[in-house]
Amino acid sequence: MKSPVTVTELLKMKQAKEKIVALTAYDYPFARMVDESGVHIILVGDSLGMVVQGKTSTLPVTMDEMIYHTKLVSSAAAYAMVVGDMPFMSYQAGISEAVTNAGRFLKEAGAAAVKLEGGASVSPVIKAISNASIPVQAHIGLTPQSFHMMGGFKVQRDEERLLADAKEVEAAGAFSVVLEGIPADIAKKITASISIPTIGIGAGPDCDGQILVLHDLLGLNERKLPKFVKQYENLGKIARQGLENYVKEVQSGVFPSKEHCY
Ligand code: KIV
Image 1 (cartoon, helix red, strand yellow):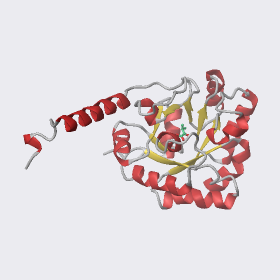
Image 2 (image 1 turned 60 degrees about the vertical axis):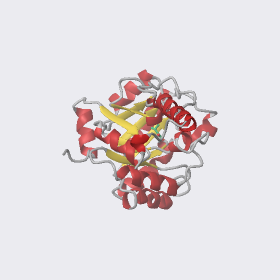
Image 3 (image 1 turned 45 degrees about the vertical axis):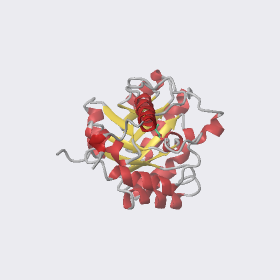
């Protein structure tokens, strides 16, 4: 069995121009499938607020909920690096609280790293968490926890600011940075101008790696999907068909049949 992916291996993959594959997961059965598919990073994203809890944003997700889901994923992942996503207000109110909360992901939930949203404005937080020996993945561009400030979930196009944010988070000690919702040409420039791996989502093909939300990729999110999503399967349709068949068969007396009886 291969040993778990480390931050040094991810850096080497960037240097060797080998694409890094990342995906979210939130529970044991899916995390196991994702891990066994060869994905390098499993992010336990706060996107679970929308795709698992059915909320309209990620803002209500709590630290305890993130710890619970990260535990489930860590217990399934043998190869992929598990990254715990720091939820809204778990790192914004103060550096000491941010370090304590980041530590919970490693200490209680078995993650190997944490992710948090923001560029230059959160670089002191990234520095403090990294100094506590907790690897940090940064996240710049369209940062969903700031949708009220951004006026919605909008593509971010300020090249100068995006480049500055990428350099700041690298200087603060981030081992990698997620680039979300930014034009492909800007993502390409950022990727060439920093030495840590960039992981794109809605940021074009030239990032060092890609990430998607599992439920979007598998057709389990029945809301309108962003342009950058590719749906590889439609498990939602298959699940609905199975459930309808079950209801019909129970009502018509087809199930349980002799083979299901003792
Ligand atoms: O919460 C999440 O799933 C994320 C990814 C979309 C990068 O932040």
